[in-house]
Figure 1 (spheres, rainbow, N blue to C red):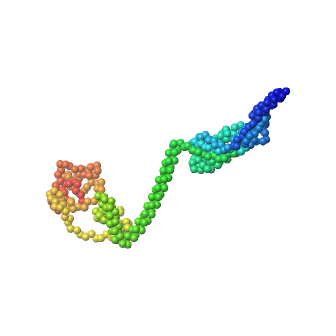
Figure 2: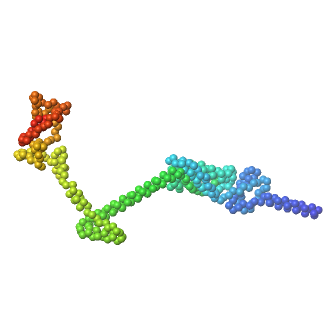
Figure 3: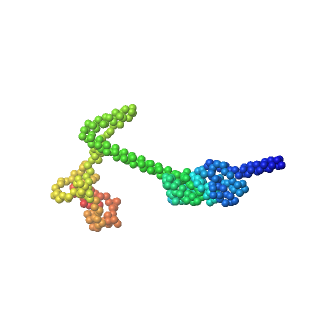
Length: 362
């Protein structure tokens, strides 16, 4: 009898030990326990520590309450200004309602990841390239709001979202590099121009000060020569006055009267008023500039005044008539034909008329 009681007691203890081992659960500090009894949610969420459930009836699911760092895969998109970019981000979130995270969504991690990818694509399409590169804080806030709105019903709180990298095409990188280089060059030119302006003002003040004392210019010249010679150069640079070059140039060119439409001009560039014609003075016979042989060149012909007026289209009437009293025939251009067999004879008399020469005219 006693032996049977002992055996029964041992069996009960063994069964209790097995039941305790099957019902005992330990919830860690960063976890919370959600109990489903016969498939229904138990109202009480098990806190961290040791807890018991009914084996075979209750099922305990532990939910991590730590902040989860989840990388968002890089997404290809086109910005609002039609630039193809590749953007990746990282999202920080945590579970604030363990029961909703278990009941409302099948896998809250996967759901948050997919929502982050779609929201990132939407942000890329609504933003410009300059915003993605320079105004990321504003984009991070907008992306956080887009993900946090549906995540509230899942018992998940989005802590923050950060855009990690924006990959640009190589052509766009080269274009941006050229733009930055051009902007730097523009700023450098503006700085140089400002420096030249300030230097010109200072030089003007120095020139005005030196103009009062001519000796100051000589002293400055000597200082420049000393500065050049101090560098042990074999070449010595001396300034040459520009006024002397201008004087030599004017002396070489000489005076050149200005004539406008055949009339002389005064100093202002306007045509001078016409002067009344003066009575011509009687002039003596024009002597040749050089001695000439009267047998070769007729002095009276050389003394005649020739003009650039065209010859008339009528036959010349000062030619000597032929033996029959007729004039020589004229060519198609109005000039009398020349007979090579006829040799003109020169008259040594002062009258200077060529006898038998049809080309002589006054």
